Amino acid sequence: MIKMVCHGDSLTEASDLDKNHTWPLLVENKLNLKIINSGIGGDTSGGLLSRFYEDVVRHQPDLVVILGGTNDLWWDLAVNLIQANIFAMACQAQFHNIIPIVGLPLPLLMENIQHQAMMAPIAGWQKCVQKLSDLVTALKTSAGESDIVCLDFYYPFLDKNGNPLGKYYLADGLHPNQQGHRLMAEKAVDLLRNQFPFNHK
Image (tube, rainbow, N blue to C red; front, side, top):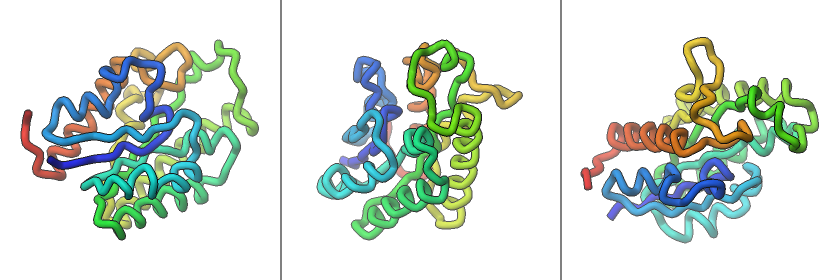
C-alpha cells in the first residue's frame, strides 16, 4: 500500500476537530493509501525541518505533503527563509526517494480574527496577511521552477473577489472547520488522483 506523511503545523494536526474529520484522514478514507499525520500545532518551517528525518524519512513513505509557514509569519520571519526551509525538506525527501508535495497554506479570515483575544503577529495583522500572500506566490513559483507538485489550499478558500470564505473557518479565523477540512481533502484527492495512480477504495 502507498504510504504518505502529512507534515505540518495545526492546519495538518487539526487538534480542534475529531480526527475522523481532518483532511489527512478523509484523504486516507477516499484513496487506497496509508497516511501518517505529523502535524504539530504552532510549529514553524524551521521546526518542521528539524524533525523531518524523525517524522518523515524514518517512515520511508512514498509521498510527503509539506504544509507550513503560517506560524513563521507571526514572528515576521522572511519569506525567503520560509521558502528555504520548505524546499530543504523537499530536497531531503527527493534524496530519500520520497516524492515531495508542497502545500500552500490557507488565507487568514480577518473578519473572525479581529474578534478574538489572541497574540497578534509582532509586525501586525496587515503585514502578516500580505506576507502570507507573498509566501503563497513564492512557494507556487519555486515549486513550478523545481518541477515539484504543489497542493493549493490557499485559493480555494477565497471567493471571486479574493476574500476568504467564512463558511470554511472555525471562529478563530485561522483554522478550517469540518467543511474546510472536507474542501482540503477534496483538493488533495483531486491532485493525487491526477498526479499518481491511486486506486479507489
